[in-house]
Each structure stands twice: as structure tokens, then as C-alpha cells.
Image (cartoon, rainbow, N blue to C red; front, side):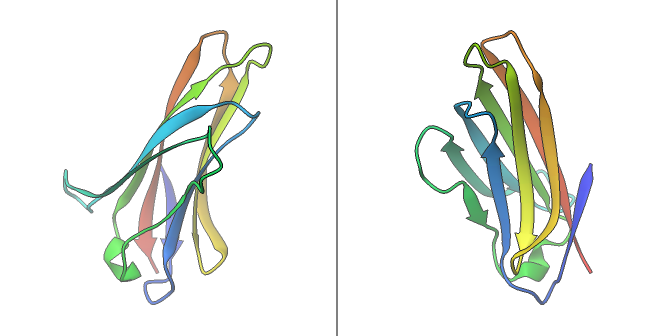
Length: 122
């Protein structure tokens, strides 16, 4: 699992979800409490409309130490394109702290991927 190290005294931490190859799809973004089966934040979105797919994590930023950002993404494969790519990027104060990517090719109608990034303060 990838780790994103953030400044505990810095600005808001942002989680952004992107999908490549102009493939449509939808996702659920979860922020899990550190060392607990408790969801702190849940957001849903898709790659069909122009709405922004980035989300501010709760403040103060220091409270995100040890939390897990989890994104479950379903991508629709639109022939003749078989390629897909999904990215989860974590940033703070306009600096990228970490990211996770799933990519490949599929002959199926959809592909489902799950991306995780653990947050650690420094």
C-alpha cells in the first residue's frame, strides 16, 4: 500500500480521482479512521459529467494521521478502446504527496479496481 506523508500543520489535504482514455465510470471514495472499521467521510462521483472529482479531507489535517483513503472505481470499457487507467492522487498545499494507479486492458464490459493510500503525518 502506498503512503502519503503530509504536513500535520499544513493546509487541507485533497484526494483526487481521475480516469484515463476517456472511459466513463463511477466511484466511491472512503476515508477510514486510523486503526478502526469506521468511515470518516464518503463521497460518490462519476466520470460522465464535468463535476470536479477532487475532495477536501477533514480539518484539522493532523487528525488524518494514520487514516486510509480507499477508492473503489468501476470503469466502463468502450470499444474499440480496451485500455483503462484510474488514479487516486493525494495533495496538500499544491504539492502531490502520493498516488496510486491501476491500469491495463480488458475485453470485458467493465473493470473494477480499488486504490488505497495511507496518510502519515511528518
